[in-house]
Amino acid sequence: MTDTTFNGWANYETWNVSLYIQNEYALYCLAREWVKEEHGQANVADYARFSQVLRRESFGVKTPDGVRWDDDKLDHAELTEMLREIA
Image (cartoon, rainbow, N blue to C red; front, side, top):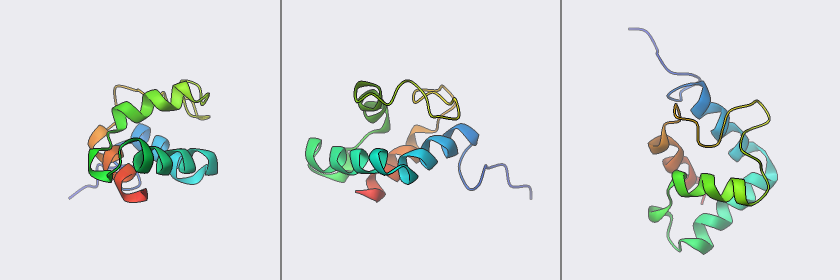
């Protein structure tokens, strides 16, 4: 059986966005606070809404590697799960 994932993520784009959110301190803090304060409970966090926050909070439209926060290839379910886990 062949592994069709990228470092355990659905694809490069999803991995790259997750990498920046989890490893850039400002992004990580924003994600934690957004899930905790804006939505009260981690189970209502949604990556699609969080990607809008990233653009609004001056993180631009893409990661430093050029992957758009709202790229069509992103696996929103995986990214939503990641947000819920870090909160």
